[in-house]
Length: 157
Image (cartoon, rainbow, N blue to C red):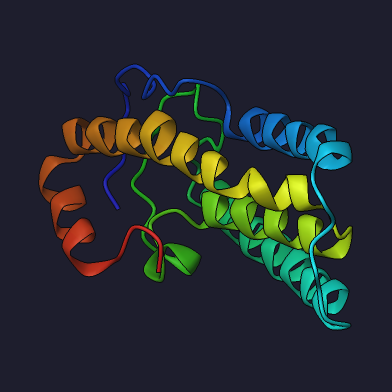
């Protein structure tokens, strides 16, 4: 891990990812009255519960890994280290993957079609408004190290 003592400006994402998640979730629940409920089998709620637990576990593990590496989690703060351990060995975006799993899990557990309908727009916002900007930022900050990391670890899974 390379330590940056004077980090460059933050990546300039369109909005804080938890706010994007919350906005999509609220929009999804607001759509609920105009959309029919999903035709879930009896395992839909249980699947939602499993996804929620998996999401919280993955995101919690990723946040703890970043804190142990002494680099900030919030996207508006400059990165000090490229973190490639823990869940970052499996996916380059474990927190965002966790947010998407949580969104899907909440939609399934609450049997909310609107929440499920906002999953793809949320993924698109995270991809184009956050992840691609972070990738450009990390490429500028850690050119060789991030390039090698990108070749070894997939963006999602």
